[in-house]
Length: 360
Length: 132
Image (cartoon, rainbow over all chains, first blue to last red; front, side):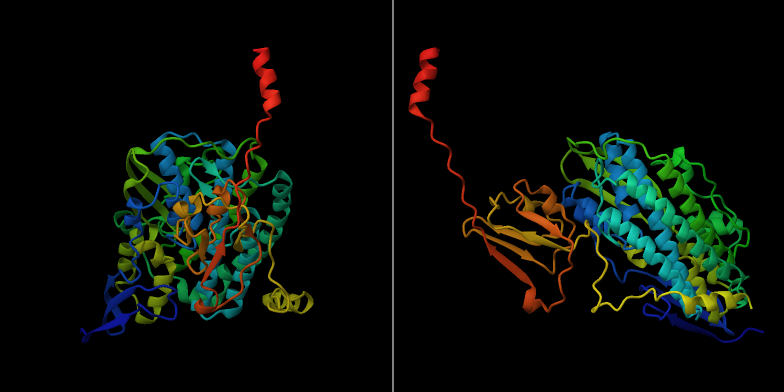
């Protein structure tokens, strides 16, 4: 027997969503039959600004595509321009970029874990996650000068150097942060209420994840070993690490992957600090970009691609960004089909949607 | 019972939050708070105006005025980095909150005076010519 079908609008303004995405949920007996996403609420036309801004100034704009993965956006853009112009970046600059990239992964994952706990109604866990995030933000501010928008990446290297004394102190502070995270992630992975609301919800099988092109923690939670860091860009080639995967294919597995990635990032930062080479942090840049380049990197949410095309002038002719959230929307739609209406907010959150990123 | 340890710990340690307006926010030496302009050093070369990503700075060469729209400025610090004359710097203190009519646009009169070239001494010039 089939019930009457109704359409329930979800978003663009919803208590669990920090940013606007609208989903039309086709409901039949409290079960979602189909979810139809509509996007475009915060489109800013950033990509067309390349005609009016010099490539070296556009780094600031590329950084402002997203507030959470700002550093990775700027480093990916710089990597693209450097690839176009054939610039060899000093080793210390690539190590510093890797370190800041991992710090932003830490702060993004902690932010997500906090928001997720809040959406599930677990207020004290939310406070705990954000308390730990605060110390990560302090480290970022002390080394780059900015808490959210770092503004430290430039074409040809980085703007600021970090002293070796500060780096050795960072090792000690990271150990303290790790101990706090251990305590917090234990709650995320073993709490009865959280398990009850996550296990078996928003299932995305391995085949479906592969076919729908899932990236980042969503793909890794479905058992796919998808991590751009293994391609060895920046300093990742010198670092030993293994992508975190889980076989659960559900919301709990995605939470688990993110919790375990926190410790992986801490380990990577320890390795970076231990192997930090001496030398300059930037090289002078001459000339203009010509040709086309695909720049890929791993953001906290997954793979990001910056496509750049230059014609030998100061301005690029084309700039396109494919962000992880946009890639994960088909997976989200597949997860929602068959889910219960009450589980929709949690399932939407498990892909870590960043709408500002998605719409540029 | 597992949670009891965590709960008891909360009674012992100090609060992690701060009483913000009473206790000032934590700052670092390199924190980007606001842009500071020194009118006596600006030569109106207009680099800051041309390269500002948010177009917050305007320089009027004829009227000798340097203007910044504080609500447009994103405090990226590029102007301070590019200024060859040291007229711009970034201060770690955050600017206070205000309404647009109170503190939207700040205009400074440029007081820079080009230093005169030292005049050549005619006597020494003659000596040089003689030697040649």
